[in-house]
Amino acid sequence: MHTLTDTPPATTLAPVAAHQRIEALDAVRGFALIGICLMNIEYFNRAIATLGQGIPPGLTGFNWLAEWFVAYFVVGKFWTIFSLLFGMGFAVMLTRAERAGRGFLLPYIRRIIALAAFGTLHHIFLFAGDILFSYAVGAVFLLVVLYGTWKWMLAAIAVAIGMAFIPGFGPGAGGAAGALAFSGLIALYMRNEKRPLSLSVMSLILLVVGAIGFIAATVMLTMKVGPVEARGPIFSISALFLLLSFLSNKYHNPIEARPWRAGAAIYLFSFTMMTIGGLVDYLTPPEPVTPVVAANAATAVAATPAPAPAAAAKADPKHPAVKPALTEAQKKAEAAAERQKRLKERAEEVVNETKVATTGSYADVVRMRAKHFAEHAPGESGFATVLIAMFLLGTWFIRSGVMENAANHLPLFRKLAYIGLPLGIGLGLAGSLIASTHLPGVQHDGFQLATGLLMLGNLPACLGYVGMIVLMLHSRSPFAKVRVLAPFGRMALTNYLCQSLVMSSVFFGYGLGYFGIGRGLQVVCALALCGLQIGFSHWWLARFRYGPAEWLWRAITYMQIPAMRVEPAVNGMRAPA
Image (cartoon, rainbow, N blue to C red; front, side):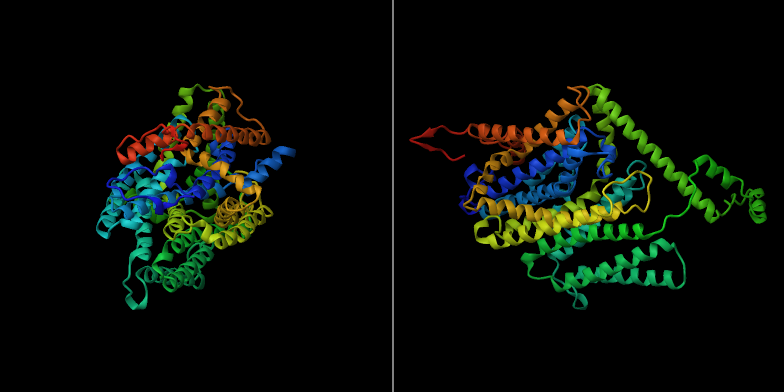
């Protein structure tokens, strides 16, 4: 297996040649692509609006078994693997550029822009469950973490905050400002060496925030002020900030370990908060609130007589009308009405999406996906913070030499496989004992807690799967044949897009119209499609250097047209790609 050290010096940045690739990355990428197909096919047969509701109720037999297997052995594990690989690809490109003394940022920015374009077109024209655009957004914030300067970061945050006040830009711009601030905090840990008060700058910030939150929660508890349901979460989150302050200061060095430590901390912190919130929700007794429609709630509020001072103020044109204070019962009724409204809107969205997917024309589906993209793209900044965690972990795997020289790090991969898989999958299965299905409108059912445990387990499970594939590649058993997935992984972008093209043509109404087939048959179809693509990838790469989408992506990245055809063999030797 050839490695990055085989790369000869060059004067221009160019695509990675076939003989310079890291085989383990391609094999892991091919394995992950199978999992992505198993996940995505469900939402070519089910409304995207039902995402996050767990196992659909009413499944039996093979359909239930297939859904259960995918839910706890596949879902969440494979987009994290792909995110890890994306970070590895970033580090491969960076490392090669550094070793050859070539520019890196401009080609990588072009790479991100091209990926965003791929993702946008994929979302609108093929599949609303696209993740490529999310990766492009995450890659921007990764560059901020690794290269952003404070002057430009503060300017960007100020611009984002200003845009948040412009109608139509509010949520997206606000999220971008928060993600930029978060990226700046991670940048402090990754790059800052100043130690005021014997603490790293990031540790000091976390300490101050955690202390303020802890004091606020204590005041709320002792003086009985503020919402009761907020006290526990504020205590818990403040304690986590204080713990992170201690850990980030204690484990600030060595510098080489910062990427994986920051990545692991971001991921675990995010989903630990989700799990704590789920636990609080699960332990909160349901309140006996009678559902009311919005009109009734509004009538109840309007019927409340206003106090005399307010009436006098209303008569005075210099004083605006004072709204009557709502009683607790009215607040609960208003909240219940709002929940009912959201549930009705969600139900209508599911019905409409299913109707368009099954009976609409291609133009109808494209319009629906375009609307979905416009609504969801501004919110990608939140998901980007989780992607940064995986990208940093992937960067460490390459920069540390672990993936480049995998044969010398088999004990590490063995630990990842033997510990990560049982722990990660076990956490998800433990959550399934609490809840595996969520019915819209049902509260305190434990599903958020179960989802938090599942998401926490996705990280060790993802690393465990990577360890498993690397061990198989380096074994002398039949398991070593897993390298058959490497060509499939080399053409991952092409194969990912082709999966969506095939499945949208087979399942949607403008195609063959098989929307809604059973989950068991979905799994069979997904595996069959992947099998055909594996065979096609071998055939294609025996004749061409890149998949079609990979060729276009590289052409945009390096601003040069890569040679496409493989050179014919001469005297039994094939010229290197």
